[in-house]
Length: 486
Image (cartoon, rainbow, N blue to C red):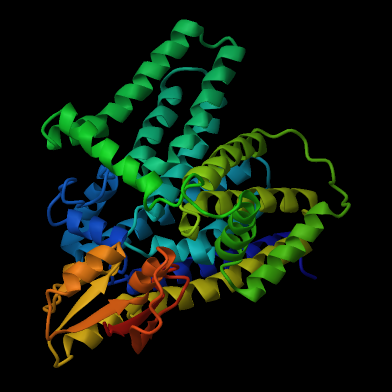
């Protein structure tokens, strides 16, 4: 007869094996590519940190770059150093997620939640890119845990921990600034329990500001003063939110179309289901079981659920209205928090072995897809790399016009001339200076011109199409090379 102890051991053993397998594959398949503008920015920063040269782009993400610099001697390329740093710090999230889940669930179920969060396929794929998202997600989980750890203890040294971790979080990725609502909640709770007065609140606010000043002050000094730093800040934020940021202000989508893309495409299909039917079915089954009547239908008020929902709501609104809707990676905190809260409620309501079995099935399925994706990402050339390889061996004399792809081509030190162009008038003037040369352009340039009202169908000859996995590069997973005929 199988005892409860044996069942728990089976669940823990299978989930542990899945986690270890994923981590081993990550370490053995470090992504060697810098396939987007942002990835090149971060990779170049390990060679020379220079905000004006966008190495990386503002605000610098100094803690992330520092981590990459510390890891750099262990690997071959700057991008792999950043990936390895992401992998190492992200693996630590098993601890804070377990500690958080343990406040509501048994030891076994708490570890199942931690394993499910860690093996989530699309988030793990982003962790294995030379971007700050992976390290930021790790810092977020530790920050989330620290809020509740400090809230449950008397005001004092423990209260300083979330203040410090929030500065680390923003020093890795500034877009997590809405998570500061957690500090507001913490200080309110301390005041409501009469552990601190208004003067105490002011003291902790000042300390939080000083923690932020550690990395902000370093950047100000690196740029030669506050004036230069503010000039950079205003220049970047203006362009980021008005020209290329994709915020709700600049995006042409209607409000309801934006909601649909944000919720169903980005959060569920990409962030939670990882564009995989099997995972979608398992998550839908779990979702249905959450809302069906159960023996433990009543979930008592719990600080983990309340605080998590608070953080989820704050960041969700920020991601909806102020982040680039075309980049699903911006919703990763929302997707993971929804997964975390949903699994917590599911395992609390249905604490029997069958519920754990379903979560184990989810963990194993995620581990299988995650390891496949990580290996594919490390082995297969991104579309922009394929474009570079194709053009590098072309015999004719030519010039290539691109949109953002030129940043990667510069990083790869391609020998052929390539230029970034945004407007049709500038392109016409510039290409006229290359008499006798073949003129190539990418589809991103052609689509940009069409959006400006230009009809180009008679001027373009399709030469080649380069494709890679859309999960790994949502924007430039397909690049079409055209020849321009005046």
